View 1 (cartoon, rainbow, N blue to C red):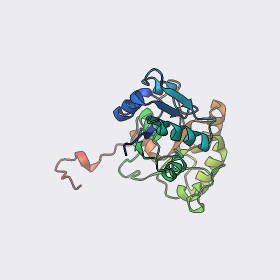
View 2 (view 1 turned 45 degrees about the vertical axis):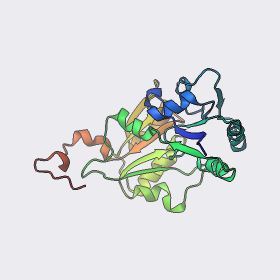
View 3 (view 1 turned 180 degrees about the vertical axis):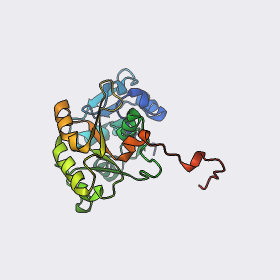
View 4 (view 1 turned 60 degrees about the vertical axis):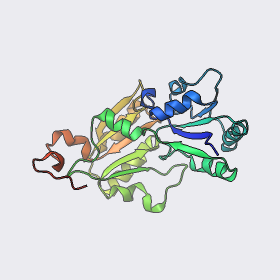
Length: 251
């Protein structure tokens, strides 16, 4: 059975960060369902005239999957656009489960995560030799629960690079957990609001000043919090083995 449904990573915001495969599917889709509260509507611009486009911010799971099922029955191609990459906080698992029950085939098209767009905006590498070789991607518990073993305080004990999603509205709690977990008050932090969008905003501050800076900015959503020594890496001359004379590829 040919695939008719595509879960597409629409990227962080800039429509030029769509993959070629994603754009090709959008161009030929009969139905597009996109997360309008998170995705730049310009991402849908390549769609053909007459394509049915549904914003999904106010749609329930049943309504979304109902639109997909109805389109598939009519032989149509569906592009379900998710912000960033679908595998990171994309809430696609529950959608796929419904399609599995109904025997509807689908494919996932990866996209550029806002994490990668944020690192690019900051002009930094998240895995600097001798500073950090580990990136922890997480969130603070809110309406969505977090496993007890993955609470922010516990994860902070690793002192690695940390990317904290979906938590900017709880910035006071985030800072408290990071400090309790062992990060020093002077640990550098960056907040990137709407990475790659035209109205992108970058805030930099030591952990001790972060709450004040964020509250003053008025940023309450669509922002990623990045924590760790890697943010000061340009102030420290470090060289990887990769470009050292005599280096032999060990991969």
